[in-house]
Image 1 (cartoon, rainbow, N blue to C red):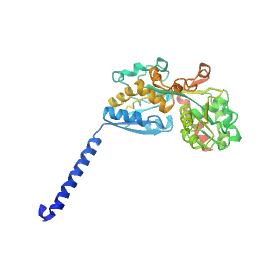
Image 2: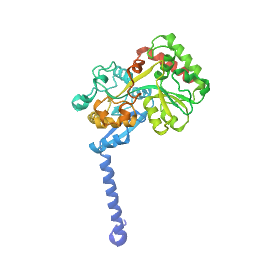
Image 3: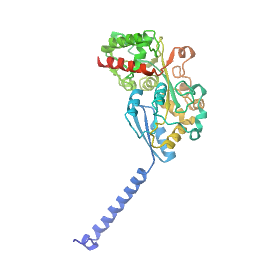
Image 4: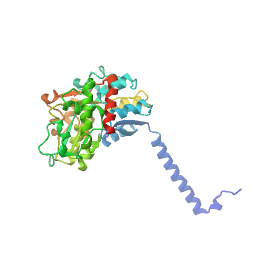
Length: 355
């Protein structure tokens, strides 16, 4: 057996050995402390939780916040239905909340841990999808419409029909979202976004199949395409358009004259959440007016917390399409869960995408 001693190592090597061991212990201690932090796992839309908000919560509560993203509500639902666990916070849109409640996927919120719910405007509470806000808290609200580059698209469009114009073949994108994109075709045809008439849905499907050769890409993150100049028009959500306009000032946004969708995106806690108390602290943190204002500044969607507005720049307090006037609001519909008829929407969407 070889003896391990100061003499066998030599004094210099002996010192280096203990310096190395010391450094290793310090590194292990640091990693161990960080690894011991509680972790909040957020599953949300791309561009919905800024680094500033994430790091602010991490610093205040001494935790780590990990953010993962999805492209649409159906992807979120499919992942949870497939048994995905570990998420503490999810952000489904209104109609998806009602589906998830039926599927028993959401945890009831402990209001005692979320006193800042009192900061939310009554306009955004007690909606059809969660009448008592038992499972959901409003995060932002917005609309779907058309973003376009005004330096290229002239005259400015005012109708969904521009997305069927062969002059723009391979120059525009559509949302990769079955309800929104089928909804655009339904509105163009003069029908409700929430039709449960098979004949109307069939006509909308055929309209989208007719459009299919003109579409450059189905993508929910339209902001990226607009900024890069990959498209000159995009069927998109309002916040994506306004964020793109910050980089490319020629980007404009319209809600077509036929009408469109409005939505409330919410914050919920999955039933399988491993850190429910921490998730409720995070929700409460998001509802502070000064933090909530940062959400609007980052996402460019409307705030549901009235006191947050005074923390916003004037252009975001009075933005025409973030806070549309009454006549525009009248043309908007909520997307509502269609129950068993949803399968027909899914089948129609699969047929469109398969072309």
